[in-house]
Image (cartoon, rainbow, N blue to C red; front, top):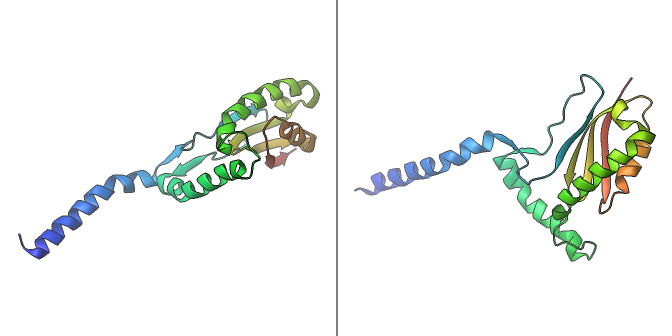
Length: 160
């Protein structure tokens, strides 16, 4: 085999080996990081669903270092009982679900919202639509009082 043929064979092998990764990089899959994504209410019609924790393979790879660094930083700083802040998210999802069930009578959030919650590293991302008379600030405050929640980020829009 000549030197050029050998390089050609190696180049072809490299392309073929990379082909599956190229295919997967364009697909979006939910929860590559197993981040809880909850659809909690649907009272407002025509409220567009958020993308949620959906990433391409390449976006996931690009995000990996950040997730490791941010996940471990609270442990290193002595602010977390668990080694990674993402490890709290499933517990928080369960606690938030219980908390939401007890809040409905006073806030009427089910009757006045279409909401999705994404939990990532002790943060709750609140997406969706709320009615004009809904007390979003109080709702955000109540969610923030859930055990182990570090921050609630309100990304909702108002609908009359």
